[in-house]
Image (cartoon, rainbow, N blue to C red; front, side, top):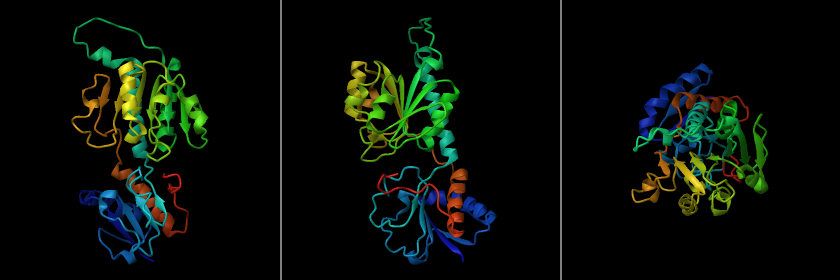
Length: 310
């Protein structure tokens, strides 16, 4: 049987993904039709992005799975018409890119590079950083991206702790979970990295109470999701010195409005949602592997749990 695959994403992505998907499915021996338009009742798989235009999945009566091009699924997981399996993007290219970005900014904070490079008074000042083995890093979120970042930082000899909603085991990383575990992960953490999904349970996970658990002058790095941080609480913590600096790549409203206080704050670094992005070559491989599985009666991978929201 030939699988009909609907590509529902920005038009600009079609010429990038079409040859890649065609190559990998042909190599896998899958018979398929791939297009940007099909009668809904003839579609077997939807390759999905929120900007592709599909809001109602009810007409897709023979759909086997929706395969997201995005790692975050908060824009689709609550769709009541989506009753078929939804797989999120777990892309090793995305994980590698995120690990490099996180590691770079952790090292920037660890080594004090901002003070060393930006020195308008030309002061010849040198304050040696502690070794990585004496620096505590907390990673909130131990999914594919968080685990990859935790492993890389541990390889550099940092003390790495992590927190997730469910129990995890990562060699060399102290893993915590649940409400009590969050406090344990944050206590004593010099640098906190946020790599959680955006769900009702994670919104404002960094707030006045949790920021108070950190040592004075701690650093925050957020390449995860904007709503993970209570912005007012973070600004207050920056003003008091409880948080020494924050590097923020994601925000509740994007692009970040020009009048937002983060732009002008001397202890905030704003980056324009660049921490990592889906790489078409590796993402196409992930999508095609799930189609191969579906066509061969094997279980899909990276399925979303609607109750958890990721």
